[in-house]
Image 1: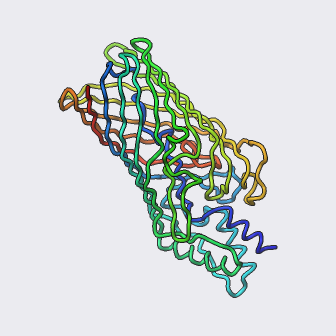
Image 2: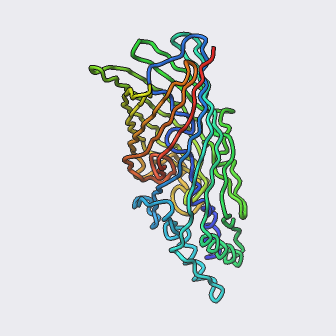
Image 3: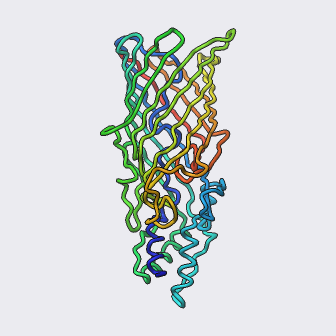
Length: 390
């Protein structure tokens, strides 16, 4: 009986995926839409080429497995004790293996870092003086570097589960993600001089990234996700105003997320519906010497409650999932982001820019992995250039 339960427990999660929890941060596996009412003139092309770099910096852990008691920690400080499954397995080994038992060190740290870099190409075209069509394309290179100590503990787990005739995928030195992200297409329409609307989305064949169902997880090999397991659609309303000489850019938005899938950590083969996101943004522009244009902004993200069913959504055991969509406890979250961008025009048709954004407040909680939620990125740096063509 204990052997069967142990086998069920290990099937709950591929332990090496403790940190490989990238659905993608923010609502943005695509490029951030220009948060203004600006559209392209009729017949003008705009090409944006830039690189984006960041790390997954903070994670929320639930060591007791109750899905309610969340603790925010640095990713580099995450240990075996933060994963309820591992501590449960350690107890099962102690009870069932006798002299063959090898103690699992619960203070072992799991990873050094998880770095992500994306190369972006955004293409936009002015169909009329009021309507611009665009697409966002990107390629991701991600590396999750595990500690040698965790690899040693992973080997112990593998050897002890082999004695119980239970398969296990031993953690590799590094987990790698190298693939396209999902492609977004959209349109932006300026219906008043100071107001515009925009929509964009990824769906069907546009979801070119490797998602939770497609990634490879084998012995000593792990692939990181670069795509979503669900369709996603965005809607925005932009407004430009001036208070004296100070320009203001106001953004409101809504992100709808379709039904998806998660299969890692304490979430085993679960059907998911991540809470939709409300976006509220405020920004301004400043002119600096040397014709450098500076934009400063604050964005607040509010998510609805997540839902899940199937898999092990009701308990750690994979056979005890909810049959109907059920709200995830304590999963409505929020985050506030600050950003600054500096742009320099080199020619009439060419400009270069740098952008930095970071979370300044984040309520980290909820069983499913997303941002806002159980993931938090470090400061994100973008460096790029814009080319206008006719």
